[in-house]
Figure 1: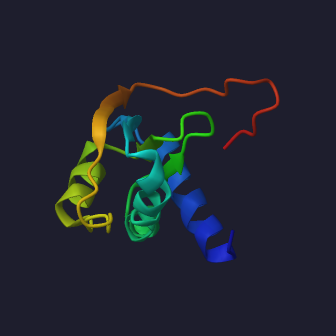
Figure 2: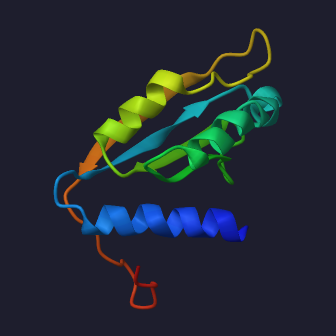
Length: 126
């Protein structure tokens, strides 16, 4: 991780933990592509992921191949608030999925998070 990215991430996290006005939003779930097209479809999300990680309010975003199911792509986004997420959605680039290949079984949900805490004793504090 570059120093610039690390600094930006730290700034976003500080703003999230110090703000009482807005709650964080997590978008999480999965979709499926035919196994023979999954990796190409996943590669088509690279530009979207890179842009999202630079977007104001994006704490983290990952779209990854599931290690067990050869058709599944897992989605996890964490945003500082709904305002930032909605601003991102208005300008987000479309993924460059191969022509004729479509996601199926789209199961993605948005969660509003009231607070956060470390789930493991060894988790770093921010």
